[in-house]
Image (cartoon, rainbow, N blue to C red; front, side):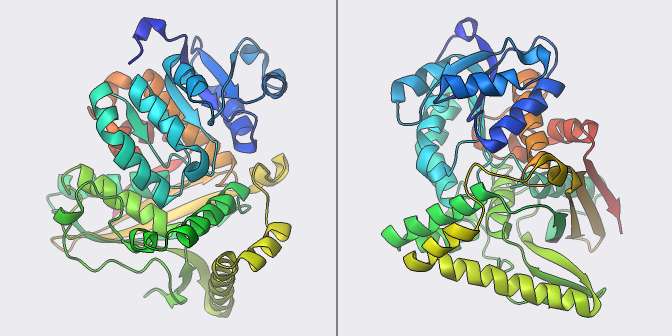
Length: 410
C-alpha cells in the first residue's frame, strides 16, 4: 500500500484519450475544486498532450502519465501515485482486471463505467478481500449504468424506513431517454458474447439475478422480474419494452441491498423496462425496440453476423458530436411498494446524452466524491456499488450538478 505522502495526484483519469475519457477530463476541468491534483493517463503521451491542450487554461499544468493495461509495472506505478483512479478503458473484461488489482493492492480508490456482469463478478472474486484490507473503495458502474437505478432505490428505501413503512417489496423502473447508442456498450456486449462462446457455463452466472451478491446462498428465494421479454402495458396505459441495461442494473441494485444486510427489503423484487409512450404509437415503438434488441442479441451470437454488425454499429471510442450530446436527456421513474402497502415514486433525470454527456457528469462527481469527500462517505471498503460506497454524498453532488433525484409518496 502506497504511503499517502508519496501520492503525487489526487485523481487520475485513465483512458483520457478515449471519447468518454476526453469528456470526463473536460468536466473535471470545469468542476473540480481549485487545487485538486489531477493527472491524465493513457498509452500515448503525444495524444495525452493533445487532450490537455484542448482543456481550459486551468488544466494546462495537469500531469501526464503513460500507462498500459498490459504492463503490470506501469499500472502499479500509476495506482501508487494517486488517491483515486477513474477509468474509462473498456471493454473492462478485456482490459480492466489488472487496473482493479493494482488499485486494490495500492489502497487506491477506483471508479469505472462498466456494464459487464462477468467483469464485476471476476473483480469481486479477485480483489474484494484485498481492497478491504488496504481500505480501497472499488466502485463499479459509475455512469448511466447504474447510478440512477442504484441511487434512486437507495432513496426509496430510506424514505420508506423514515415513514415506518418497512422495507420495499416491489420496485419497477421505467426508463425514457434521448441519446446515441454507445460504441463502448456495444463492444462490452460483444466481449460478453465471446466469453460465453468460450465458456458456456458462464451463461448460468449471467442469467442469475443474484450473480453479484456477496452471499448467494443467503439471498431470499423470490422470483425476480425477467430482464427481457415481450412489450407490456402498464396499468395507466403506458407501453414498455425490454431495457438493454436492465440485466446489469438490476444486479447492481441487488448487490447494494445485500451489502447493506438487505436493508431495502429481504423480499425485494426489482425490475426495469423502457417506456415507449401511450396509444398505438407507443405500442409500435415497443414492438420495434423489442424486435431490434432481439435481433442485435441474436446477430451478436453468431460470428458471421457479428462481423456484419461491426460495419453498421458505432465503433468503440466514437460518439456523437457536441450538439447531439447536448440535445440528449434521460428520465427514470421508479414506482415502489413498501411492506405495509404504501407506495412511493422516485425520479432520476438529467440533461445531456445519457451515455456520454450525462455519464461524464456521473463519473466525474463519483470520482470527486472519492477524492475530496472521504470523511463523509460510508465507512466501507472493498468491491462496492455507487449506493454503498458514495450514497447520499453522491446524490448531493449530482443534484448540485443539475441532475434530479427526488422521492414522493404516491
